Length: 326
Image (cartoon, rainbow, N blue to C red):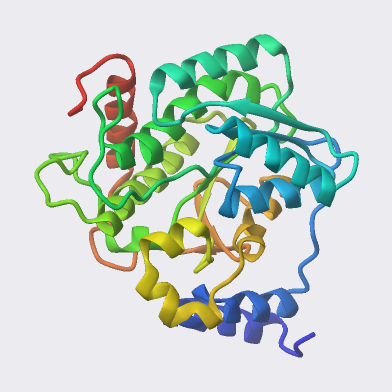
C-alpha cells in the first residue's frame, strides 16, 4: 500500500493522467490500485451483457464479471469462439451462469433479430457493456452499405442500446457502459462526413472518430434519461494489449510493450462500473481507472450537448432506413 492519501493521492492521480504515459500505462493502473485500495465488486445476481466477448477486453470482462458473481450474457459473431469463451469463463468461475448469444453488431438486421429474441425470452438485464469494436486494416463496407468501423463501433452500440432500453429500465440499478478509447482524444466528430467517405482511409483516425461519437451519444442518452432511470457511462481502458491492438498497431506495441496493461487491467473500470451506484459513479461521465476523466484534450473535439443530440438523431435516421451515407 502506498502511503499517499487524500489530496496528495488526488494530485498524483491527476499528474499521471495529465502526462498520459504513466496514466494510461500499467504504471498508472498499479499505482492507483494500491493507492486507492481497490477491491473487486460483489456482482452476485446482477445480469450483465458484454458485446465482443470472445477476445481481448470483452473476454476478460466476461471472465471477471463471472468471478464477481454476475449472470453473464456474452454476445459474439462466431459460434465456435463463443462456445470456447463460455467454457473458459466457467473454468475460471465454476458454476457461473453464462448464456451465449450470436449477433453480428455491424448489421442492423441481425441486431434487431437478436434483441427481439432476447426481449421475448424474458431474461433480466441490469447492465449492458458495449465493448465490441473493430479497426480494419483497409476500408471495408458491410452488406448493408455502411463503412465497417462506423457500423460496428457506432451504429451497432447505438441500435443495440436503444432496443434493449425497455428491458434495462426494468433492471436493478440499470447501467450502460460504453468502452471507448483514449484515442478519441485525438478526434472530433464530423457531421458533414459521418462515415469519412471523403477521407483517405487511416485505421486509427477512423477508429478515433467513432470512439468520439460513442462518448457523445452516451452523454446524450444520460441527458435524455429520467431521474432514477438507466445510468450511462463511457470509459477508456488505458493502453491495454489485445489481439486487435497488436495487429493494428504493431509498432506501438513493440515500443510500449513492457508497460502495456493486460486485458483484465484494462477492463477493471468496467467491472467496477457494473456494480457502482449512481452516487459512486454518476452517469454522463467519462472514466479511466475508476476516476472521472476529462473528455477533451484538444480544443473543440468534445462537441456540445447539442452535437450529442444531433448524433443520436443522425443514428436514429440511419437505423430507421436512411441511406448509408446518413
